[in-house]
Image (cartoon, rainbow, N blue to C red):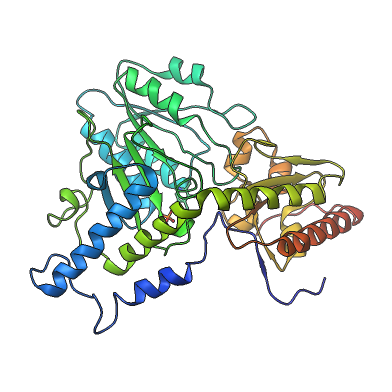
Length: 392
Ligand SMILES: *Cc1c(COP(=O)(O)O)cnc(C)c1O
């Protein structure tokens, strides 16, 4: 294959910033621009404060929240840490039992692991083979002392969409805090927090065409739904998250949210058709399997395993197509994707997995290059003698 420029099919890892967003951000950084500290009581400070609060309204509108229920953070990792640690600690006098799944993002699983070391007890609910949480299993796991449940909206490796409404209702019935990591969902699937029984929700701008390093935590305004802060240092963000507001970042997340809201349906239809094109172009290869839902999940993600193919060699052979792999060496973690393993895949099949993720700027020609590269790579690697490979 002679392809000059890389083909980007890794939108679940991050997205480029919309040009209009980058321009608006720059205008808040430069001399002569709105670079003031929003805490300052002078014209430039007030101008900056207006930007911060406008962004809060723009993001709130995208997810059906009230602006005052949003706390600015540095991204979903921080929001996950705040929500889970802060929620567990706030409720610990009532009980120390928590529930989550092993297929969550590391920002969630590592936070629960840290809480286990602090003396909390965590139940890890395994998904069924299609990645879904079994509601009966959740009901069985809930105890008198259960205080917080954390389940993600859209899985970042497989695109599985959980039934957030049903899980939330179950939690409300037992007065349990319900946290949702929605980093892969916000701006891509419709979310209306005025209807959804969600207490805490994490999100990050760079998954919906905003800048890296900025996100938010939604905290529902209802009795008993509170968290203890995990950072200290001032009165910002309702004393929940101190530090000078990153005005340029907030300008970015606000505008990115407004743009996402205006085209969420259009983007969805676009990526769904490209995912269909991609799968149609490779599905006749022997011994391929989709990890996660064949349909019904988030269409921006197609995760495919190829029996008898080594994942690392596949990644190399796929160059210049930018995708993610379920293989150990790539993730430098020492094991195959823990998410795919939790779906019941053996190490080998998990390592052969490739996650294609499609986005707003993907075009049919990208998909066609990916199809050709993938077909060529799988066929070639299967023809070569299988070699036992070890990660170094
Ligand atoms: C990307 C992502 C995160 C982390 O977001 P950051 O902005 O890197 O902190 C957390 N959870 C999920 C599901 C993600 O996809």
